Length: 355
Image 1 (tube, rainbow, N blue to C red):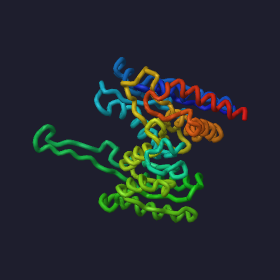
Image 2: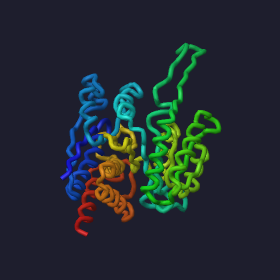
Image 3: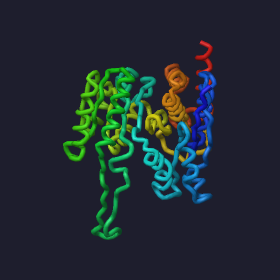
Image 4: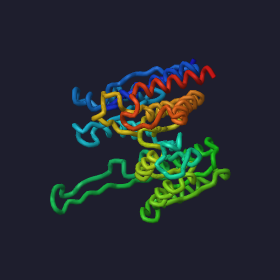
């Protein structure tokens, strides 16, 4: 029996609650499909920092490097400076583990969840691959004359040929695996951000290695428009870091809200990180009102990454069944108790085993 090592970081706010339900689902799926998910629980997050002045110590980080995957609940706390914990945990993992592909499935489970008129599950089924280690997020910024009337702030966008090519190639490989419309769309703004011409040229060159895959192109502003008007046009899209950060949240709302959307921060063959994309929502912490659906979907992505495809599909199928049957009405805060949603997913998973 395969035994996978998982670093579990519940984090802040509602993070520990949704993580608890996701891990219950992961344990059942592992039991049903013949593998183990052995977890090491780490306390890192804002409360831990306030108590110890410690964010993510190197000794623990070295342990995590040797594991198969990381599951993160949520991070962020208004009592701390903006970005302190986020950069100390999630950005540290992304950059120091070189998790170059941020993978965001945008999938509508039931038309009642979609805010778009006359759009259903057949229309919203795409994956956006966001470059995850370059662009404006590398930390290359500065201030001159800070606090004065003539203050200047700068931030440098960075694109490398290696970083651009590997994430574009990842998107083409993913498109082949999905085998849907076999189309990869490049989303950029190379007409205005001229450095992104590197993306245009690299995309064209990589595409020659995939003659079976069709290619499309959209500037980011147009892509946002088309995602709302005609989401069915998209299969797999690949985009630089900053634009990907924005358009994936638009995609999350098209699929029904932040409470459904999950994310993988991936480097194939290396330890990778999976998380729901919603925030920590500290005002709802400890009240058993936050939806764990996004976290449960992140556990499905984790299983898929580990090669446990049947378990991944079973978890996703259970969530889909709950929405299509009407047992889950949505993911708004307080619509269903957190643990009750976990119970429903577990019950539906067990029912699939008996079918």
